[in-house]
Image (cartoon, rainbow, N blue to C red):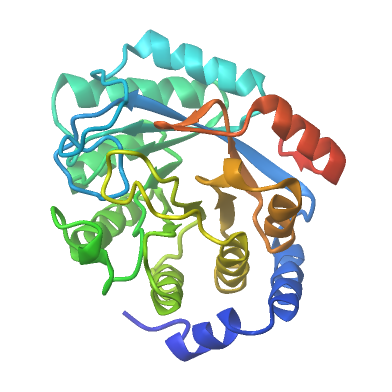
Length: 314
C-alpha cells in the first residue's frame, strides 16, 4: 500500500502547540464541512454480552465479571421501534452493535439484514458493528443498503496485543478491507486512555489516514473504565489529549466525519466545545453507548443551544 501521509508528518502535526493545531484543524474542517453542524447518531446494543473476545476495556466479554444485562439478538420489531425513537429525537444515523466475535450465518444474520433494511426505509443512515465478517456477508449487507460498517482499530499495532489477544491487528485490517471491497463505507476509530503512549496515538491515526480508501467515519473514543474489566481502574484521560487526537485526525482525514464518541459524558461543556472547534462533527445521543451511560438528550439540547450548533437534517 502506498503511504499517503508519513509518520514523521503525523508527529509534526500532533505535537505542535495546541492553539496552532486546533487552528489548522478548524481551517481544514471549514474547507470540507459545514462548520457549525453536528450529526446526531444513536448506537443500539442489539445483542448484549457473552462475547468470547478478551478486549480488556469491554464489559461484554464473557471473561470478565461485570454487572451488565445480557440478552440474545433482539426481535426485529424492538429494533425498529428503537430506530424510530432515535429518528424522532433528531438522529440521522442509527448504529447497531452485536457482541459477536464473528458474524454468524443463518437466521440471526438474516434478522440483522432485515434490521438494516428497516433503518434504511426510515430514511436514516444504517451502520452495524458485528465483529469479523466474510466477503459474502459483506456483500449481503451492502445489498441490504448498509451505509457503513464499524470496526475500530482501537490503538497502535504495537500496543494492540496489550489490550486484545483473541484476534490480531491483521484480523482487524482484513475486516476493514472486506468492508471496503463490498462498497460499504468504513467507520473505524480509536480508543484513548487504554494505557497507550503518545506515540501509540499518533501511530493509530497514521494507520487510519493511510487506509485505502480512507474511512468516511472516525469515532474518537475515550475509555470509560468499567468495574470488573482489567482496565476498570484506569484514570479518566486528559480531555486535551482527546482534542489533540480529534484535531490531528481532522487534518489528515479531511473528508471524514469525526465522531466525539465514548467518554463524552465525563467532559465539561467547554471541553466538548473545544472538540467541535478541533473538527468533531458528530456525537452519539441516547441514554447508553452499548453498556455505558451517555449524556442525556436534554443536556445535549442545552449544549447545542448554548454553543449555537445545529443538527444535520434539522
